[in-house]
Image (tube, rainbow, N blue to C red; front, side, top):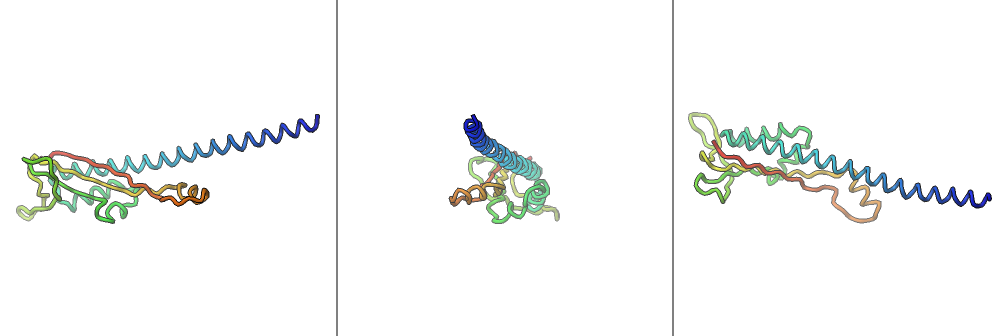
Length: 160
């Protein structure tokens, strides 16, 4: 009778170890995914605010400042370095298929962006999201894995 009781305790411990490891894996996956979605939502908001500023004719410097101030919970240094992470483009009012880099023009000592009225203005942002537990799990498994994933957002608005 005593032997059966100790065998049952051992089986219970093994079952608990399997169930607990699966439960904690699921919990950590939910946390990682939530942080990734938070970064995506902040990035989308910043791109929307930048596109709104560009559609109203703000200068490229004002657009960039608005984007950076809208993404305060992100490491904004990573949004502008390298410069390919923040792309501001516009189309010609007649040809809305091809995009060119958004530039500035000065009229009566006021700087505006040079997108013509009716053109599409596109703001593309890329942000390297750092996994909180991803690198730790990869190192425990003995695999080499990147500890970042690029999150992107694009907003297009018509220049007024």
